Amino acid sequence: MTNRNMMCDLQTGICGVAGEDDMEIIDFSQPAKTVNVYYVTDPICSHCWALEPVLRRFQEQYGHYFNFHTVLGGLLEKWHDGPIDPANGIYKPADVAPHWREVGQHSRMPIDGSVMLDNPVQSSFPASRVLKIIDNNHGADKASQYLRRTREQLFPFNQNVSALDVLANIVDVMGLDGKAIVEEAESPIGHELLNEDFALARKLGARGFPTIIMINEANKGVKIVGSRPLDIYVQGLQQVLGKELQPKELPSLTSLLEKEELLFSKEIEEMYDLDQASVTNFLKENLATDAYAFKEILGENYIIKK
Image (cartoon, rainbow, N blue to C red; front, side, top):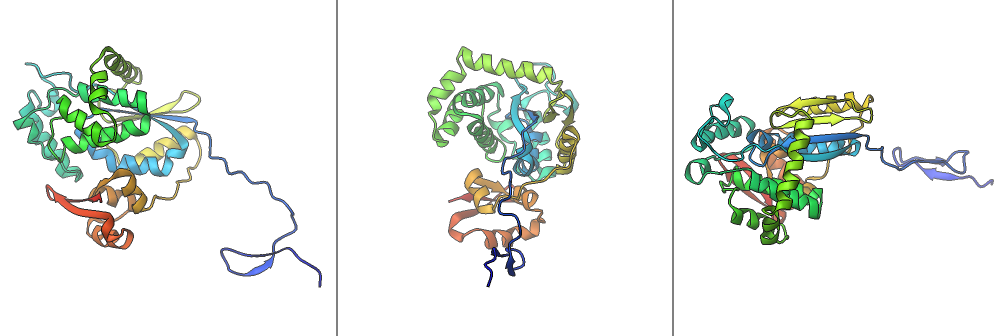
């Protein structure tokens, strides 16, 4: 009997001749990241908090096509006698609370807002400077984690994130030296790094938050203002790349929770195309019962990693 090159097909389960070619050249390289995505935002931007479920899925499925840059735009330097955001009727801290609650109810990313009545955030600049120091010293992933933790503490858990001790505690919980980082953020280097972001935001033409700007190698791009559905960002990316996109496989819920540590129901729904009523069963099917704690705040469910 003549020896043949045999194989079992992974998809069909049928064994047979492998084929005539002894060797096949294959390419495992990832596509070159030829697009820069600039996310112009601010730590206390409520509509940016509302965007988090969509933005996370966009990055998880399409992040292999682009380099992602967080750019801080400076939403609130300080309160003063004039209007801060007249379009939304915001002149003083107390005006923020009902606006935030409305955004939270509409988006289902919970926002309490009473911190703006009881212990108002005086400025978004201190939290922004801390982010720039973390980005500069520890990299973009840690900076992104810090931004998320800051928003968690502010919006659902009602902490005043303009207070330096609150910021230091957030950084400490991340495993970094909160006191040292906050002190550096308040030094001239912190101010300089943040001013560089402000200049970039102006150069990009961002006039509100969130703004996402995608720019290709030819220096052409698209600007998407406001919190939009996923397909808008996918269409924008496809337009600047000029080709069909191949989304990556979604992360398992186990790996997502390991990375994020806290997920609201809306974020799980958006990531896995679920309706709200299906989330509880989805958790039971995809997570070990001792891997998470199930909690509720402001009428919304969330899970935290144990």
